[in-house]
Image (cartoon, rainbow, N blue to C red; front, side, top):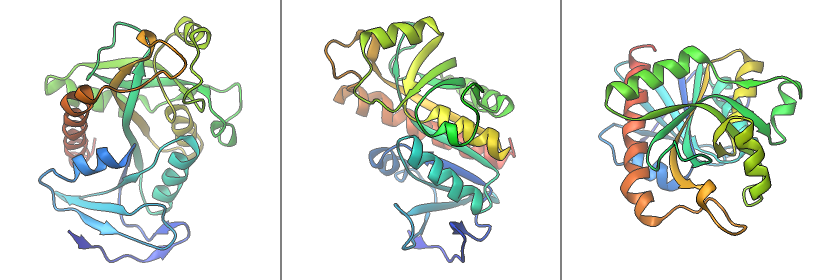
Length: 246
């Protein structure tokens, strides 16, 4: 893996990529780096984590790790400052209803805002909605490869271990099918910046089926047997869609 030459500009770099992918965690990143692509590294003193650069069939993509609403949007800001025109998040989510199964994809149309970052981008009463054309393109691409994709509303919260039984019932009543920590903030960012944004999650746990205060723990067998393989497959699908300019 070689280092990519770059020119630092503002909070990012000078027009280095057209598409940006936000990866939820280091284990997911390491799994993706095992794929048969020629990745390059972009490092700088002002980055929280290294970025990775990929030129696939003339399609320039950068991706990096970030988690939680404030840091995900910070990375999205840096991507856009670097020339990126579309941003997608790839992470995990916890099921709120039985109809979504472990290892399946959830690609949200919209998100319930229960985090503090979205308010800096859109008004409190404004809905956090993904770019529909972008969502449908990714959904179609994954389904054509035989994957189950659930579309719907998700609940984004800052309270990682504060998903109480009462709050879960309320969000299910509001139509949410799963929960994460980033989608609503990222959608709000996309609305504010007028760029297509999407959030893709793999079902890693079943919050509705969890007992006690600490909900959302993923089983090791599920993580390595279902979650990481689906992350790799999704990454490859996204890269191919980008290469087709979708």
